[in-house]
Structure formats: structure tokens, C-alpha cells
Length: 425
Ligand code: SAJ
Image (cartoon, rainbow, N blue to C red; front, side, top):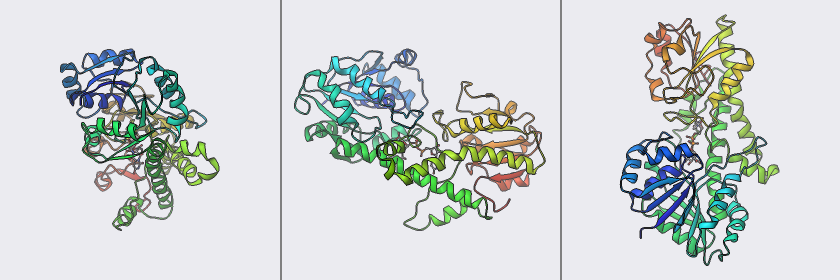
């Protein structure tokens, strides 16, 4: 049955989700505190980059099934998809979740369903949202239904994963779970697994923590390999041929608003019991420092005492424009601290937001001694060493993402280094 929805938060998750519900026939009222984003969305313009979003937004708005506003409205279902970041001290900042819940209270009626999609520490629905929703005067679980259905999609492939991925639905009771499942079935083709709200919260945090711990392991292997004449990328690839081994890849650090953040939710709740989780976080957080140290060392080895660095890649991962928690920004800070001069370039980031950023690749390379790849964008994988050669002052290249075919670069006369690979160095 077609429903009316009020989706609070029109960011990387809320906007694609709103558009998906709308093109499947539901009437969606999107809410965001960002006036500019609201205006752009109503004009069918995007304030974020995501494959397939533009055409779906146009379809939804043209069908009259999606509009955005800065205020919530009455609806059958309320979906909350707001940020849940951590504070400086690594504790969860649930202010956005709390405020979004407070904002819908005046609009919630008997029979409504409230779904939280944001990733949160276990017990947030029970301990943070329910007390706020009780202000409606409705009997929770009998007159007002509540669930957690965490988003699990990866930026860049959101529309594919919204449809194909299995989904977890954790209701505060069975009726809440069933209502939520029925709604998502309008576009989800993966299985929908029902559980309680707190288990759903835990499962989602586990997914990202698993990945963080696994990446930390890969980074540790890279650090070891840098000392002992091994290429960790090759060794990990070989180990992964074993049917029960799946090691992730090393890199200059872990970015994004999820994997670098969510493990702290568990560390905060049980600090003494989350030793592997905290160690992994710290290992991954050390990688930008290590990257900057390596830049300095490689330059010194080539007797370049005052190197100029061309940093390629500012987003936190390949082929997206999202820079939240990007390791590149931390590498920049480290270089600034070391007094090393640099330029930055990223074909996916159209506004100049980072230090010394240019939109012109040739300008970024001008007088550079060392080219450093920090994000494995497709554009970088296709870089032509012969072309680049004419632009740089010295020919050093440091690849932190195994994006380049370094043999080719070596043959073109470059001194090459790959993070986590001392086999050829
Ligand atoms: N990274 C590595 N090595 C790897 C994989 C990733 O260094 O082997 C780095 C990336 O470069 C990036 C960071 O980790 O900086 C995170 O990237 P990602 O692609 O692993 O994850 P996200 O943050 O884009 O999305 C994750 C996904 N979770 C899982 O894969 C378990 C996604 O499904 C979630 O929806 C999302 O977090 C979220 O919102 O929680």
C-alpha cells in the first residue's frame, strides 16, 4: 500500500532513500535544516554526488511525489537519516538524532511508524528516542510504532545496494518490525531480517567495526612488509586465495563517516572490553602520519631536502566526492606541520576546499618533486607516466593505494614506492 513519508535528513542516505520511496509510488516529504540543499533539491539539482541520483531525483520531483522543506509535516511514516558523528573525545554525538526526533513529535499521530536509519550505539532507540517520542502522549508499541533499520549502502553504489542488499529491521515490538518490513519491500529485493531494535543497532555497528579491524590488520601487515623486503599487497592477495581468508587492503588511513567512527560507539560503552577495537582504530589513525613520514623519507633518500609534493586524491575513497574524515586531509595537516610544501588535486571535488587545491592537474604537478596517490580514483589509474614526466621537476612517485602499475612508471624513469611494499625498494 502506498504511504506518505516524512524523511528527516537529506544527505548521502536520506536523499537517495527518499527518491527511491518516491519512484516506487510513495509520497515523500523530505526535510533538511540546510536551506540551500532544500532549494536545490526542489529545483532538481544535487548537493551531493551519487551515481544515478540525478535522473531519479528528476523522476521523483516530476511525478509530484517528492518535495523538500526545512519543516516536517504529518505523514504515515517518519524516517530519520541524520548524522551520528563522534565528538573530539570519541564519544557519540546523538544531538542530531535527538533533535530530529523532537522535530517530528508535533506531527506524529496514532498509527504512525518512526524508523531510525542512522547508525547509532546499541540502546539508542530505547534510551534516547523512546523517551522523546513518549512526549506525543501515544502508547509506544500500541499507538506509535518504532524501529531501527540501519542503512547499509556503500557510497557510489547506493542505488544498486538499496535494492540488492539484505536489510535488518529491528522493531521495538513485532508489529513495528512487520510494518517496517512491508514498507521497505516496496523496493528491497534482498532478504529482510527481523530482530529487536538493540540487536539491529549492534549488528550494524559490528559490520563497520569488522571492516575497521580487518583494515587495521592489513595496515599492520603493510608496516611490517615495509621493513622486511615484502610486498604486502602481493602477500595479502596470495593469502586471500585460501577459502577462509579475506584480508582487506592497506592504505593511507580510514576515512568516511562510518568505519572511522562507529567502532568508538562500542569502545565508549565498554572501554575495558574493547581492546582490539581501540587498537585497530589507533592503528588506522596512525596511517596518515606514516604516509607523511614516508613522503619525507623518500624525498630525503633522493637528496631532495625541500620537496614539493603533489597530493592526488582528497575524497576518502575512490570515485566519490565525499571528504568526510578523509585520510588525505590528515596527510595535509601532517605536511603543514613538517613545513613541507604541497599542492592538492581531485577531479571529483569541484570546489576548492582543501589547502593549496587546484582544479588543474598540470598546475598541481608544476615544479613537483614527488607525486603521491592518496585515493584510487579511476582517473588516476589511467595517468600516463610519459605525460606527467614533462610536468614535474623530479620524478618520484609514491602510491599509497596500489593504484598505479609502478613497473610502467619505473620504466619511464621514475623512482617509485608503494606503501607496504619494500620488495623493490
Ligand atoms: N579502506 C581501506 N582498505 C580496505 C577498504 C577500505 O583502507 O580494504 C578505507 C577506504 O579507503 C576508506 C575507508 O576505509 O577510507 C572506508 O571505506 P569503505 O568503502 O570500507 O566504507 P564506507 O565508509 O564507504 O561504507 C561503509 C560500508 N560498510 C561496510 O562495508 C561494512 C557501508 O556498507 C555502510 O553503509 C557504511 O559504511 C555506513 O554508512 O555505515
